[in-house]
Image 1 (cartoon, rainbow, N blue to C red):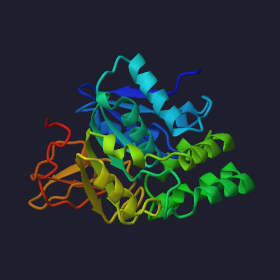
Image 2: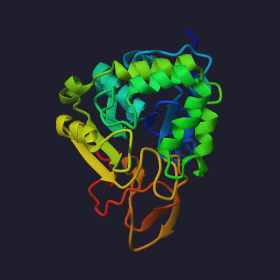
Image 3: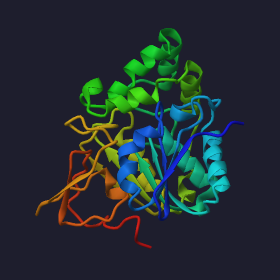
Image 4: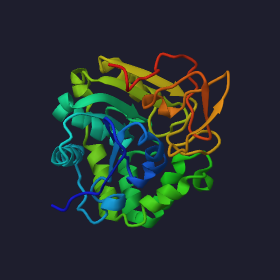
Amino acid sequence: MQDIYIDDQGNGFPLVLVHGFLGSSEMWSLQKEFLSNHFRVISPALPGFGESYKVKSQNSIHKMAQTILKNLNEMNIEKFHLLGHSMGGMVVQEMAKISGDKINKLICYATGSIGDIPGRFESLDISRERLKKEGIKETINRVPKKWFVKEDKAKYFYLCENATKEITEETADNALLAMKNWRGYENLKDIHNKTLIVWGDKDISYNFEQVETLNKNIPNSDLINDEIPHKADTSGKSIVYRASFSHSESFYWPIEVACFDWSKKIKYEDHLRVSIKSDDYNDWLFEE
């Protein structure tokens, strides 16, 4: 089997980022630019997606999880932090099921425990039917827009366009089938890693019941939620933000709260924000 693409940059404790449906490694590019100052950031492109478009796609979340673990093993990475977004959140839960002892801290962003997502803007069966009827070009023109408040006018929407340039109908359908057939609910009680769950109440892919299920059933988990959609805040900024800093008495924690050493001396702007005025999550990845 051909190897998947894996971007590997920075030094420090490994942090693995797993993208979602119609994603790519590049979609994390602005996070990687900043996070690599603190961690060794490893961001694979799942088989058939993004930079791994030449690799045969997979129709199983379990297989996707195995693929990433296999590659991490070949890179001699024995222990790592793990973050997954959307479908990638399903993959990281499956990775925790297979090799939970390798994961130091787990971050589930905008995801749930059931692949056939209740409350999604449309059922996965409808997405598959529309994909077959309308074709891949219409699907990639239609679906990613729903992740942004300003749709394709959002500042970083071009990263979604880049991610889907080479994607095939087979890859998209295999991923939809993989999600539809995946169920992780029964395994939540066995995830003993310290876990952070992040969700926004403007998310039209995952409703609060889904993320609350994660929080209630993963024993050592915390939940952050605020008024953000599946990919962007009200200004249309994508999760693939560029962090900038300005000193301020007031301070808001963005999605990066899962990854950084925060201080009340700084305010993060021009990015996806989660307004948490507390220091409960300071040093979340750094503390023992």
